[in-house]
Length: 224
Image 1 (cartoon, one colour):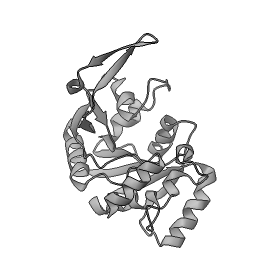
Image 2: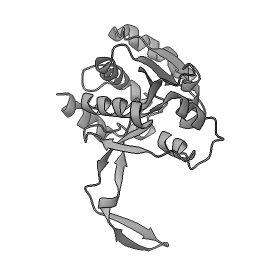
Image 3: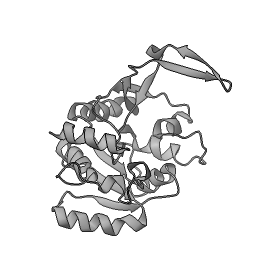
């Protein structure tokens, strides 16, 4: 079955505390985050079609970085939209209408998804049509009740959601034909709005989203 990956990389890096978008930051003295992510997917399946979604004003910088670091992994650049929803929709627009294909949507700043998780997500999606990787909650959770009070909730009935979220191409295109709402926090929530069941599979704890300077330090350790 044909495979696609839409890698969404539209962050501005405000929580990183600098002017460089977080997807362009180097991990230690190596290449930028987004290149590590591309390499991870290319290593999993070199025949997979990779689509990188970037804001228009970042595309020139990305092309310069590819030249500087010698990144020769084949990928198509697509211009991002107003929100993540619209960016994914733009990425989907360049994928043919195929019923016998799956597409994974992945955060460009998650370079440490494991090969095992990629394999589980893509293979399971061929059968189940909608699959997301998750990890257990290991800390105690409290729910806010009103302005001041809070209560403990059972963490065993919650999971933390990661990417790639992998779907049948036709299903995801149908889902993204819906009008945008604030309730769409990820691709699974968009697909779920159609009444489609979302299947869970085990993620990997190292598959963190690099958002803060602390995350970048953790990334350096993971890379070593």
